[in-house]
Amino acid sequence: MDATVFLKAIPDPAAPPESFAFDGGCPDTSRVPFVLGPFEENALELGLRIAEGTGGSLRAVAMGGPEQDKSLRTALALGATAAVRVDGPPSWADPVVAARLLSAAADRLGVVEVLVTGRQAGDWDRSVTGALLAGVRGLPYLPRVFDAVAEEGGLRIAQEVAGGTRTGLLATAAVLSVTNAPTTILRMPNVRALILATRRPIDVVEARSLLGEAALRERLVDEGVSARRLGRAGRRVVGEPADVAKALVAELEAQGALPGARP
Image (cartoon, rainbow, N blue to C red; front, top):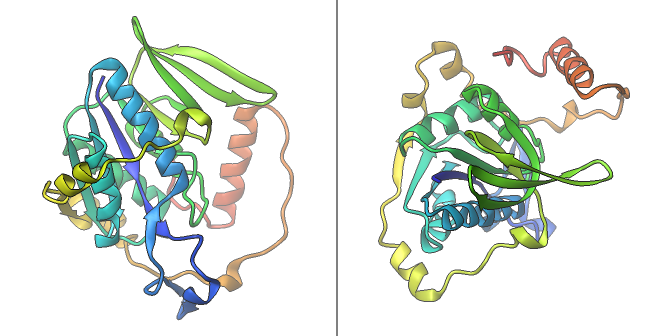
């Protein structure tokens, strides 16, 4: 079973606070080293397990500048067969546009059956890219996955749910959002594999070339991030998951925070 994993390098959370700056509406991370995000590590490990257990292949996709290449080469060193980087936009880009860009980049690597993302990014913590990716591709979305074992007819998926865990047989293409667990701790590549990975090509594609719609290309413009927009007000929505999701989307659209996100 072939899989594609979506990776993201983030500013090192262990870097000293004085390394970070916020000026002109955009975070300045030029003095901060980038590392593979913790949940992307989980996603990469599970993607490797899926490929190995089913006899398939794993491909890696990332979005951003050259700071993302190290993460892609880590995937190549661990056994990924190909890697694509979407050149821009930055990590705080419109998540709907990001999902469409990543989906288009995945198509460059050929038909895959399982798309694997981290539970959330370790920098902005939006936790929406995986679900939006599933919506863009019209696929089922399985959140908080912590294991996937090959079984006749598909993959036996294990998920965290309220009050415990559950398993089920996945027999169709889907997007898996992976959480942290002992089964998703990333293995370490050996030195020889890392050296060989530096010689492997990374397919770099310009972001705007992947978006045919003018409206989406316009949304690639970086308008910065303003700390003044953050607030502490909110309201609690309870009920069935489908009703909660509808209420959340309606509220975000009413606030202008999710324009044009409906499929």
